[in-house]
Structure formats: C-alpha cells, structure tokens
Length: 319
Image (cartoon, rainbow, N blue to C red; front, side, top):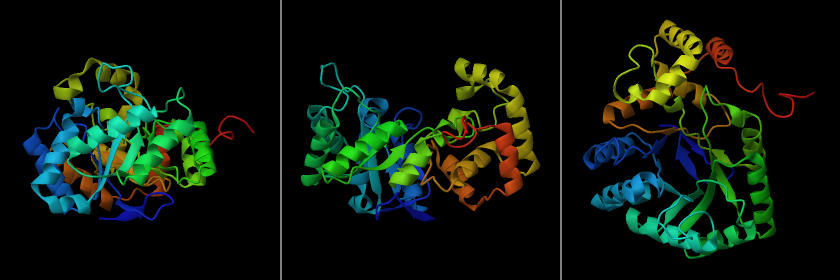
C-alpha cells in the first residue's frame, strides 16, 4: 500500500480511502465486516463514513467492527461527517454550534470510540457564521473528541473564507476537502483543486467511477443496479462518449472501472479517492488499480473523450 500526507498536515493516509455508504444498504453487516477486515489487512488505513448514511446504521456497523477487535481503532484514520438532518427538531441539522456538539456525541456513540480523527462538514452552511462554526469545532478539539476538521462539497470561496477566519482565531482550520470528481464530473478543476493546492488541503474525491457510469455499462445496462431509470437516461445522453471510452479500455486490456479510478489517482492534487466496495471481490479489483499506471497517450485520449472545463480559472474561460 502507498501512503501520502493529508494535505499540509503530518498525518499519512493510504492512497485509497474506504467508503462505507453501502454498508447496511447494499452490504450486510457480515459482508461489511469482511470488506473492512480485508481493507485493513491490505494496508488501507483511511475509513470514511457519515452520520446520515442509512440513518446512522452505517456508523453503527463500523463501530461494531471496531469493537470486535479493539486493536483496530488505533490502526485507522476514522473520518465521519455531519450536516444533514438527523431528526425532526429545528436544530437537528446544519452547522450551528448546538448541532455540531450533539452530532459529534451521537457519532461517537454509534462508532463506539472516544474520538474522531477527521470530522467533516458534509456541506457548507452559509446561514451560520464561521466564528460560531469554528467555536464549536475548537471546543471538540480541546475536549479530544476530534483531531482534524475537513469540508465536503464546498466551493473554493467557502474554503478560502473558512481558512481566513480560522487563521484569525489561530486555529488550524480545514485540512481536507471531499468533492465529487471523476472523468465525467471535472468542475473542481476550475477552482477547488487550485484552492486546495494553495492552502494545503488534502483532496478526497468521492464517486471516482461516476456512480457506476464509468464501470462498463454498455454490455448489460438494464439489470441490477444498472437498471435504474436515471442511469439508463444518463447512458443514452453519453452513449457516444461511453462507446469511445469502453473501446479504449478494451484496447489496453483494462476494465473501465479500473481505468476510471487510475485516472483520478494520476492527478497529483488528489490525496485518496474514496472507493465503496460492497464485496471483498470488488475491493480486490479496486486494490489492483494501485499497480495500474496510465501513460501520457492514454491520459490524452481520456481527456479527448471526457473533456474537462479547460483547465483552471480564469484561464479556462478568459485570457
């Protein structure tokens, strides 16, 4: 397993991050245990979850796995998230200091641990002032309940504003950003990636395989999860690109899913893409990508098929 620093901080994480959103929904607790155990054995030390995944069940499954062998907790970097609605009350969501504290306590209980290594804001809350948000996070750091704070789905200007106010408070601020990023969805190349590079944030892309679109969908797109109407419509909108993409993958003898993940890993701005295997077999396929290096010719051809925004802002659209 390869390891890298999470942005500017001294914490080292595996080049693949184990996502858990499928645990409790598309993977039973038993299967989830097998995936997590195999991931740890393979050297993946970065686990990501969220308090709203499957209404808290996912955190509970992760917590049960950690408790089954207490040595596991100190072997992983445990990340979870808050923001979404967790109840019917008026303060059961978003990023007030009130909700930050309650959400953290609830996650700690479900995860059966005394601290969260990376506590991520699942979305920006522009209604709550940053002084209040940072006050809530600073208190959790002082109490030893969280170590680092990250963001997810933030615009570049949100990251910059958050960091500016954190600096005024002599607080470390954000250490990572979790954004959607794959061959089809490349918007963060405009401003988020340059912002994270400049401010020293690690980048943890989710959906590196485009929600299944980049996993080889033309062979049999109407069965199982591929039978979703929304996915079928997306396939038709991108059919010409998908045909060219899957033909390119076949020409180099690689499954489309592996090529999609390898492309994300090839970007030097990326810390660790999040994989979401439902089975040990899928995890093994993901791990094999660490040995796949795409040459410049293939990378150029992928850029031609899945054109990005044209580079970084403002040069992508202005002089």
